[in-house]
Image (tube, rainbow, N blue to C red; front, top):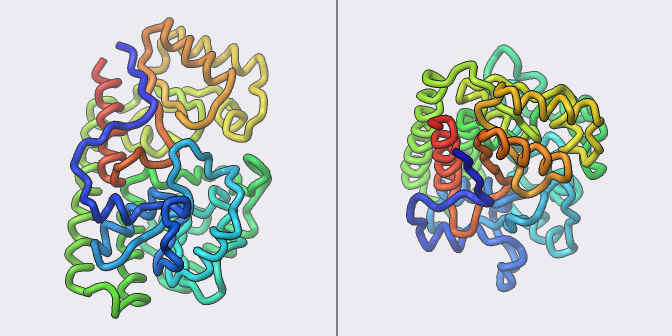
Length: 332
């Protein structure tokens, strides 16, 4: 079976509050200030689920056709972020444009700091969320950066696409709820915040459970990653990365894949070593198309992942659709 999709489908109804709350700067013309601003609609959606209808959460980027790696912030973006009380960023070099926008007085939550393999977190989980740990992580990030995609800095050897890791998002949601309660106590009711947090974590744990079931059923099966974006999802499903070394990194950084590496990639797929191909629907090039064509010829399913949410989707809807697609692909 060949599985191709350009964007995840909506699984659940999304409330009008959530739809309005995750608007980007381009659709927030009437808003002079927003107390919570996120770099992308992925994090805006999670924050909106926590605050409910108490306030609007705004995303700098909410266009699924926009690649955050190369985003150039506008003057309006700068005003929006600098006026925010709480700012949510991915970090790790992914949304580097945020570094120049955040005001000195804003509280900042950086998602990568809650990943278990973030520099400084290895071996002791993602639970370290106190101020001292965050300062240490920030220093690690500063010193571990290297040149990456579109001129932005990335941490060598670290996959910054942490929003594809449901477990990391659970820790992020816990931290966000704490910061919202601390920074916006007069705006967001503490009881409602706690209830929303618990409900959101339960939904994230449900996604974890589905991936654990895939892990049990498909552990060790091969996955080909045209870019690192699907790495966390594949790992949670127990899949083994069979991508030739350097292929995914070259594609993500906009560099040509060496001909020998591309030849190795086609051989891996044609040999049946990969049970599924995970590609980035928003980026790619000739090498990615070559992989997709090879996969189609070999009857290997292709699942397209995106950097941002689809229109009208919440994070839970979107990730649920991604897991649906992976389940279907692995089921054959």
